[in-house]
Amino acid sequence: LVGSGHVRPEGVLGLTFTTKAAGELATRVRAGLRALGATTGGVPAGEVAAEPTISTYHAYAARLVRDHALLLGREPTARLVTPATSWQLAARAVASYDGPMGDVDWTEATVVKAVLQLAGDLAEHLAGTQAVRDQGAWLVQRAEQARVLASKGVLAKAAEDVLACHRTREQLLPLVDRYAQLKRQRDLLDFGDVVALAARLAQGAPGVAETERASFPVVLLDEYQDTGSAQEVLL
Image 1 (cartoon, one colour):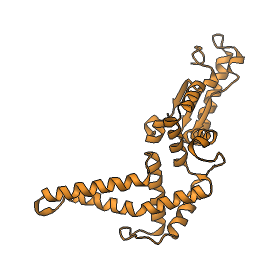
Image 2 (tube, helix red, strand yellow):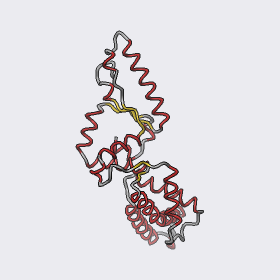
Image 3 (cartoon, one colour):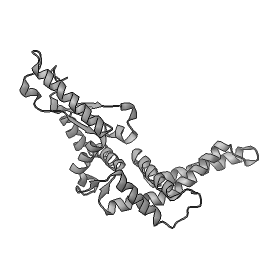
Image 4 (tube, one colour):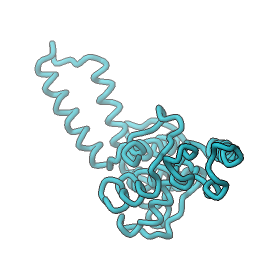
């Protein structure tokens, strides 16, 4: 695209899932641009002095959130936490919780892992904990209707398993809320937060989207089949 004059190098955004992949892609792109500048049919060397932006999805999303934090009601000073710090905060939320956990018979470490997974899933789908509660109410209603129609009021095992799974999930929701509160108090964001916030910028701040599209007419997505819901909204 650069060689054919369709785009300048700085107009290309390359996104990957891992820092290692971003580094490898950046190295290959630089080598390609150097080779392009050295060919007789390539663009002049001055045209390839600039480079494309090669980044992970999370780093790109974090930059958007940092640059436009006030539009989201956040402080631009918010820091991206490491997975280890996320675990510590979730563990603190679990250890200090004294609410009902009758449907959760896991070890504390397993509960921490489940809280982080559920928090990440909610961010991935741009949903809050209330959406899970609303879904649970719908499931219970449908189950009651099905029992009325079922022989002797007995649901299929698969349906009962769904209800049991949801009861467990609902008991984790206060812990997910507490984990989010701890992050907010410390002005921290995890990987799920930054992508979800960046996706909300894309949805609700047209000026931001227009600026990004003007800056990057070409976006290259590595391993698109692994792109999640929030990432797809952002992109």
